[in-house]
Length: 397
Image (cartoon, rainbow, N blue to C red; front, side):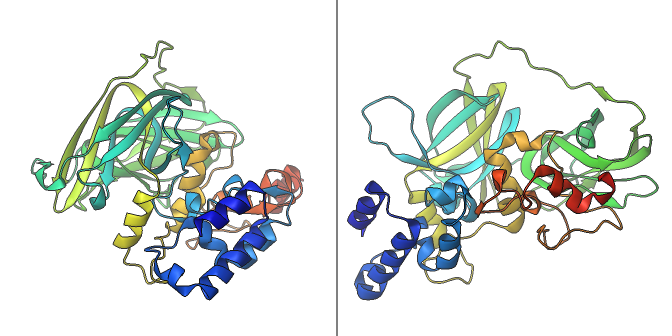
């Protein structure tokens, strides 16, 4: 099987032919299929032939589709395999990135999959998209990890502040706060009542920052910060106000003198069978963790309890698939010059049927972009950016 794939890739055989041959091998050689402990990402087309075939007919194809790396987006923990750039004599081992935090902070927390106990993972830190650290980190036996200190009651929310009110393509407000333990983050807001909410930021952190999008100018907004810890205890801040009558930016800018390499230390904690890694750097960085080859994906498939064909890799959730994964490769999409996602359309706004929305009515990256391939530049849902905007904002025409 492996020889067949290498041959096809060498001579650039199309994905349709590739999919057909994979299916033929699996039918004609059932023992070969049984020998595989888990379906590998490059076999996706054997079951999803229609998707693969349609993609090959389009002008603009998403890079992971073109490279036959469906796992990048669809598989839980299947972050993009990236060849090492160490410049040594090692073989081009791939790294499956299973956790990443695009926000630049001194501290990062990740919940670690149980099968990674007593293994070595790869760590990469970046500042402004530039790599400043790459190293291997040995994980302990999780049974011997230090226990979290007892955490009774709700988390404490403090240093709550409005960092920025800014007018880009849309009017946004950036809200930040801290917690005394690791929690997730969300903001409830509204003019007369707290009837709107941002998408949940499910990163574990003690420093939080949420952008509220789709605001109107010249208004006063009420808001509260909400944080829930790893034990399910939810805390809510006192209600505060911000105004969109004037714009400002009070964010603390970082200097240009980034220490290279950045110093990093790691500690590990366990809580009721769950293990968390705490990574602390001496300079604010974004961080990702990965394991070499397909070992992580294969082990994750064994841990999956989802009712899918035997050996099927565990799929990511809809929010991650249509928002989080996109931003992980396209961090510029988080800026004010991109359409906000994770929000619901304004009351009375008509959303065309070809603009896909999430099950709860919120917009995602896939509301404007085709997931796999399109004949439109940037894989837009409509032929031009103007037509795309006018699909929802008809009054702009």
